[in-house]
Image 1 (cartoon, one colour):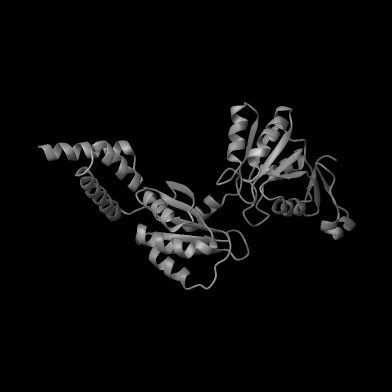
Image 2 (cartoon, rainbow, N blue to C red; image 1 turned 90 degrees about the vertical axis):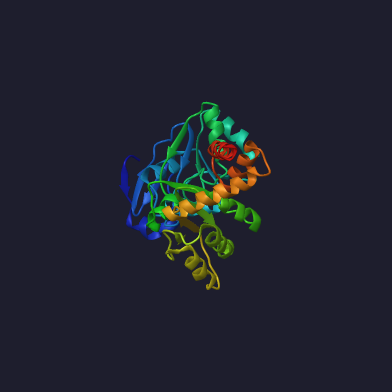
Length: 316
């Protein structure tokens, strides 16, 4: 079969029950052929919610590879069934990655074409496929990247916050102490922050963020591209209060936080210098700089130079 072929009325009526031939996929009532995928690892971005948010190239690749490595084969199967793709799938996740990686690399060395997908969005973003992709590169094997949906970029755009410079900080730590240290390290970043959080920890996380970051503007993006999509844009203290009033919160959540303003940057600089001066009373410049750099999440060299300047001023 070449190009596109219109399905018959019987096939359209049969819908999901009518199987597709290997190497094909369907969009609506049209059957499309997919050429065999090139040898190598194909990193394929998949929808973060709405299954229509997938590229034509991604569909061709998923239908044309010999094997699809999926974080959760049940989740990936929903996408494959939507587009009537018959493909062999195999689980590849954090619990079996170490065991599976050598096997996958051997297949790639023998010329196999393999796709790597996550449950949603672009693989390798907070995803166990990072080490596999790195190993593929290190061994000189082909690596193909298929761009597409990303919860990070979708949330940044939906937030309406500054996008000239942004930092994806990943998942917020689960334990309270680690979470506070994590947020303190991010406090001085001169960029819009993008973070992932689970529904059952979001209230505690927002409370800590309001305390650490202050009244910065933020956006909570929930269930992006899905039926119950929601974007709430408020200063952090108000956002924390708004979510605290809800009995239950569900769905995938991305939090976007504006960078510090000019007044906040000044206050942060003054706080940092005061902390450094206090540290210098008890420690040498190198030790004091290392401690303060870690505490404020700033480059050690920058803090060390500031420590030397403070020490020289004291001597004069």
